[in-house]
Length: 328
Image (cartoon, rainbow, N blue to C red; front, side, top):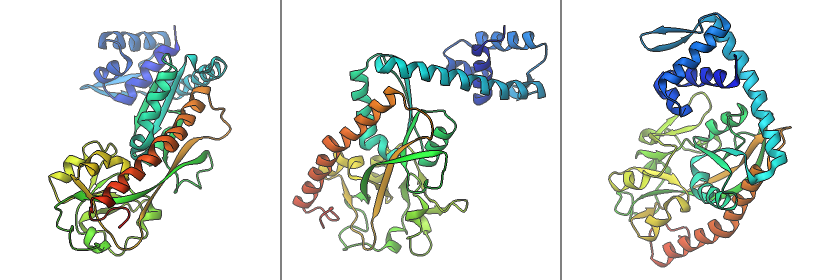
């Protein structure tokens, strides 16, 4: 029998390109996955895959089935969402994609609060670059995205809603060669490798001259891509402590290391960075109660935790005389 489960197995297998990885993602055994695909082929009477040295290659029949199955599975997923809308937050699921900055600034704590309020709610969380977050929303892989929205104004299928505006800084180890010499120029800062996520063209357009060792400009969209391009920034403090690299980020991303005086804010001349992130969701699509509850938690964390915390860090940096503090 052709079931949604077997169609999902085929789609997952194609996405992962390997029976072992696909079985792991589906939480089933590899033999069970292989048996499911064989049963689907038996029902249809055609081969869906070409098995060539372990590679997963769709036959023309497989391509048709995959295309149709994506349509059927989307209908099923939308139906389940509508049921969740009626059921409220007591059960159901929430799929969210977060950009690197909002994942650290408010996303993690908001997820924790939401899970505490609704322990039966199943939450899937992805952290990715802001452009990838937008694509996941557009493809309906997730219900909601939170990422940089400054360069997405022309994306007609998306609704964008501002959440937080946080000033960005360049961070470095306290004994970095540029420290203790007064405010650094952009040219001086761009002579060192930068660490972080890609920076939107609206900011990169203000960089004076070539970006040198700091990274490169993506010719496709004008984004600045740091020399060390990371979407998850938990290891950035270690990278800064062991190198002359500079990291782009917000105060919340380096709160512990700033308060411990292990990392400093590099004093800079000229314009500063501005993180402008917000919610992203599809137009003309109802938001489930779980999604609305999560959005409410994000706003609460921003107001109750993040803003006071950033003020505390700024005060500490100014009081300790740390070069490059927000107030100096």
